[in-house]
Length: 308
Figure 1 (spheres, rainbow, N blue to C red):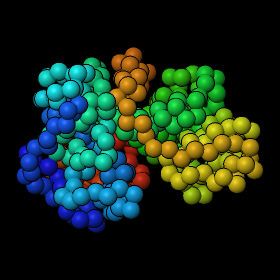
Figure 2: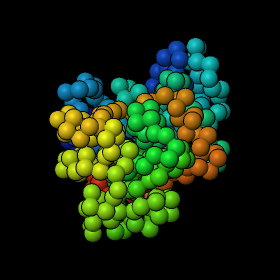
Figure 3: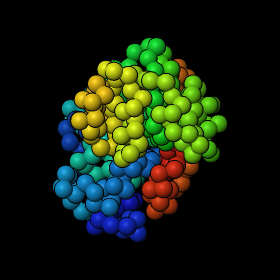
């Protein structure tokens, strides 16, 4: 089968189109014919070798953390899906990924594809949606009526987090650059903060939750807008424990829950038109180097999707 492989860590030029053997199915696996995948920051972080000490990958490595496609085969103990089902999900990061024509995924990481989405739209959702859901619902336990700030609202995680928070009845503020102000208004953000003009801590009343996706000094400044007892889930580095104690808040560093059951909750909101995925760009799988380059700018709107 055709795949994009990585034979050593390094620049995007290390990504190569190759013919490799189809994946072998484990007992509870589903073999998915990949129709579309997408680019996530973790993909190029792995490619650069940033996670080499944490995860002992073997080469050649196939990257890719999202999949939308059609079930071609099921393992002997897999029972959730049948051949021909349209599915989407985020596979286990310890195994080869989705930049390929076929991928073997444990059925626990998959859900039925939303009926109102194309494969390209569906492929933009899993990892970003699961990260946003884990942050706000599973960790911060947002409640209707609470005030939420989403840092980096125009990105893949941010754009879905905004919509999840609104669907849960929260008041939402979000930061972005000038070029994305109107986009965030269209997502229903109650207070859009253009960081090129204003410091969010100067114009925002205290909030219950900050979803922090930027890190560094932005994370440190975010403590200033949290109410006592507030929560700060972070998708970057762990929030400073001393600052959390000083401000009387809780900080959390998290990784996404790759549960198909959680993804199915997101599917329900999508089919109810409470969430719409944001696809900023669609490329062919062979254009993966361009996709990684766009993602590494940190300014992509929504998700970069790859058709297979």
